[in-house]
Amino acid sequence: MASSLPRTAAVSAVVTAALAAGLLAGATTSAADTTDIVRIHDIQGSTRISPLAGQRVTDVTGVVTGVRAYGSRGFWFQDPQGDGDPATSEGVFVFTSSKPTVSVGDAVKVSGTVTEYVPGGLNSGNQSLTQISKPTVTVVSSGNPVPAPVTVTAGSVPDAYAPEGDPAKDGSVNGLPLRPGSYALDYYESLEGANIRIGTSRVVGPSTEHAELWVTVKPDENPNRRGGTVYGSYTSQNSGRLKVQSLVPLAEQPFPTANVGDVLTGETEGPLDFNQYGGYTLTARTMGTVEDRGLKREKTRPQHISELAVATYNVENLDPTDPQEKFDALAKAVVENLATPDIIALEEIQDNNGAKNDGTVAADETLKKFTDAIVAAGGPAYEWRSVDPENNKDGGQPGGNIRQVFLFNPERVSFTDRAGGDATTATGVVKERGRAALTVSPGRIAPADAAWENSRKPLAGEFVFRGRPVIVVANHFGSKGGDESIAGHRQPPNRSSEVRRLQQAKVVNAFVKDVLAVQRHADIVVLGDINDFEFSDTTKALTDGGVLRAAVTSLPRSERYSYVFQGNSQVLDQILTSPGIRHFEYDSVHINAEFADQNSDHDPQVLRFRP
Image: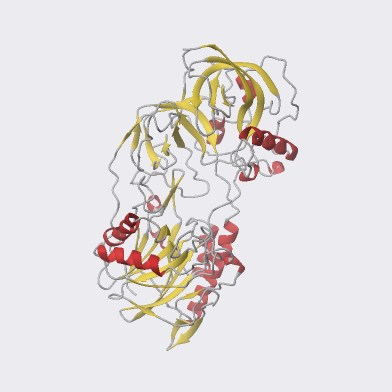
């Protein structure tokens, strides 16, 4: 939510705006007190939006099931006597804004205004959280038993993820009756605010600095051999995923460290919340214990003397202000885990002073520090080629001026330098001695095209390996920023960022076609952080006309991933090959994304072939 208002004021603003826009279907604009006895299930109702939204309720009774004294402060309470309707939750959150004065087990009476709070704001597309705001709370008694939790299991969560949204409501599911026996999102919504429990569950998203992790209650749902859950299509959202946070302040109880494949053993219990970053979240009053299953970082095999090894690696805003430990860890990975590829396309190399926004664009100090670290780790003395961007014209962290860079091992491969490349000069394709050649190398592809506005421009370079020319194009397509969550109220969610990447893919595809028009069997490698899936329209546009193949599709479906997001193992980084590269070996080297201790949030990719 782009607001500096306190959350109490922001909540009212969100509800008022939503009601005016008709986005909270089924809610009333009346703010009058209700005189009838109101129970929690009356507040929750049988849709996502409370039938009492905007109204003031009086003396709603229940037992406190969880207290949050940090962040969004408040508490959950629950009616021990339900109405027997599986669509109506018996628990609800009370937003107090200050530290709550109640304790778990207190029987309370709560008066306040029923509101629908949208984490992230209305434009986020997120579902809303039903809550009671501006409360008056009376403690009736203490030490009462907490209402028995609903146990969430593989059998209780439907396989189908979400219903189709109402076309008359811009695809929103807000006004649809909940069908908790048919759809996972409906099932979780029917438990919003209620006390739930999970048993021993596999970790599918590592713990983070935000004190969270992801588990699955469905161990057989799209698993991979390392313990994750693979996101293989837009209709394979993996309904068993559930985010876990702790209600206990970290100063009192540090959050456990967990990698993908570890197991959260025992029972984890607490209220079910909905937040901006991941949707439905078990806010644990009591947590199980993380059992370390010993996940190891992978190592790819060294390339044969006659194989060219080409890699892509997003090094996550690397700049000289980063600690030496980050440079050393990334360098060690290049040497030990990637087996020193002949060519490495790096993404997110920042300029010489990182995020300091003073007009600096050169990155030679960043690259020297990195290549020196590789030598210190026992690797070769890589050389580099790149094109400095215009200041603050390529997106990313303001002042950082991220760009793609080629590293290459001069003992194995040579770079064909063709002068003239700069931030605004486009490289082209000409015929030279019967082969395709770039007009400038390194050079940028169509940097003036609108597809690259405030985004990284592709970097093309000519290499020679054992007498054979290879053209390599390093990319960092637009991010997924602005896309709606798969747990949002619009189903299917709006993926607005795809528009930009689709344009970018078409530009790169056209360039590849230009190369192949000059030399039909040219060896071309297109690689980088594509920021999109192997099944996406972006990838389809890149491969249009059969001029490229997404090499990741040569792997079994369960091994296709380079990134873990909200418990889904998915593809973002790719290497694509032209038809002239008939035989290759592809490896997604899992060294970061599955681990709590990360040197980058991306896994590098390596392609080996014989030109």
